[in-house]
Amino acid sequence: MRVVTERMPTLKSVTVGVWVNAGSRDEQSSQAGYSHFIEHMLFKGTSKRSSADISREIDALGGEMNAFTSRETTTYYVKVLDQQLQRALELLSDLFLHSRFAPREIEKEKQVILEEVRMVRDDPEDLVQELHAGQVLRRHPLGRPILGQEKTIREIRRIDLLRYVETHYDPRQTVISIAGNFDQAHLDPMVARYFGKGRWAKTDPANGRHPPDLHGGVLLKKKRLEQVHLCLGLNGIAAGHEDRYALYALNSVLGGSVSSRLFQEIREKRGLAYSIYSFLSGYSDSGMITVYAATRPKEVDRVVDLVCREIKRIGTKGVERKELEQAKTQMKGSLMLSLESSHSRMSKLAKDELTHGRHVSLEDMLDQIDRVSEGQVLHVGRRFFKLDSLAITGLGPLSSRSLQAPR
Image 1 (cartoon, rainbow, N blue to C red):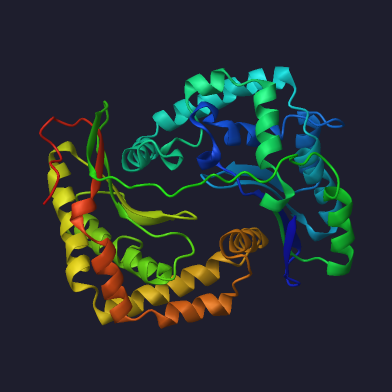
Image 2: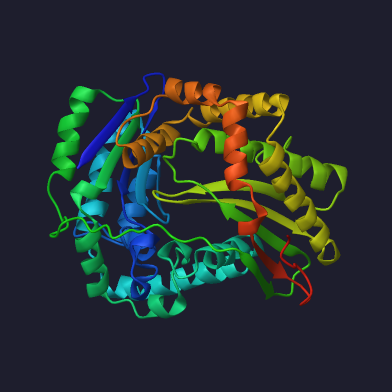
C-alpha cells in the first residue's frame, strides 16, 4: 500500500483520502453499479459502530466525511481539524477495513441508490451526458452508468459485494493520501497502526482494462422538457498523455471559460443558450472532448452548426497567439487557486500517484503550461478537432429531422 503526504503548516486542517484503483470500468456487465454500491455500504456500520454512530462521530469531530465513485477509482475521505487527525484515521480505517455489509442494510441501500438513479434521470444535464458516454463508448465498461442499472442493483447479494471487495480492494491497488498540517514523525506510525491490518484482497490485483473504441454519429432521445440538451463529442487523450496541457489550452479556448469562443459566440453574442461549456475526460488509456449546451428546440441546428464551425476552425487554423497566452494564464490561475485547500492537495497527490507513479510538483505543472507552443497547439488541434469522428447526443422535444450529422 502506498502512502503519499504533503505537509501544509499554514493550515489548521488535514484531509485523509483512501483511493482504490477500481471503479465502474472494472465491473463485468452483471456487476454494473457494484463499485458505487460498496462505496455506500462502507458507511452503513462496522463491527463496532452503527451507521448512526459513524454520523454522530464525524459531527463530533467538527469535520466532513464522504466518498465518491468514478469510472476508474473509488475514494473515501475525511477532513478535520489537525488536532483530530488520529481520531479521523481510526474512524476512516474502521469503515474501510471492517464494514459489516449487513443484509438488512444492503436491502435498504438498494432503495436509496434506486432513488439516486431516478434523480439522474430527472436532471437532463446529467442524463444527456450519461447517454452521450454510452453512445460514444458503446458496450465498453467506460460507457456504462457509474450508478449501474436497476436490474443489477435489485439483484445484488451480500456475497457478490464481498467477492468484489476481495478481488479489487488490494493494498497494491490502494493509495492513502494525506495533506494538511501534521507531524510526519507521528503520522507514519498512526497510519501503520490503523491501516496495517484488516480485510484485504486475497488474490492478485485484477486489472483487465482495455482501451475503448470511440464512435461518432447521432443519437436522439425524446423527453418532455422546455429545452433540448446537447452533447457533442470528439476523441481525446489519456490523463497522462504528453500533449495534455496543449489540449487543456485548446479546451479553454473552445469552451472552458467565460471568455471562450463558444460562450462568447453562442451565449453573449447571440443569446442562444444560458449554459454552454466544454470539458475533457481523461482516463488511464483514453479520453474524450465534450461540448454541452442547452437551447430552445427551434435553435438546435443553429447551435450545433456554430459549435461545429468553431471545432473545424480550431482544427484547421489553430488559435491566435493572444488567445493561447490568455488560456495559459487562465489555466495557471485556476490551477493555483484550486490547490489552496487540504482536500484539493490530497486529491492531487493521489491522482499523481495513480496516473504517473510519482508526485508532480506545482512548479513542474506551471512550467509544462508555459512550454505549450503555438506549433504544438496547431498539431494537437489538427489531430483531435475533426468533425469526421463527431458524436452528437440530443435529449428533449426533438423532431426526427433534427440533428443531421455534419459534414
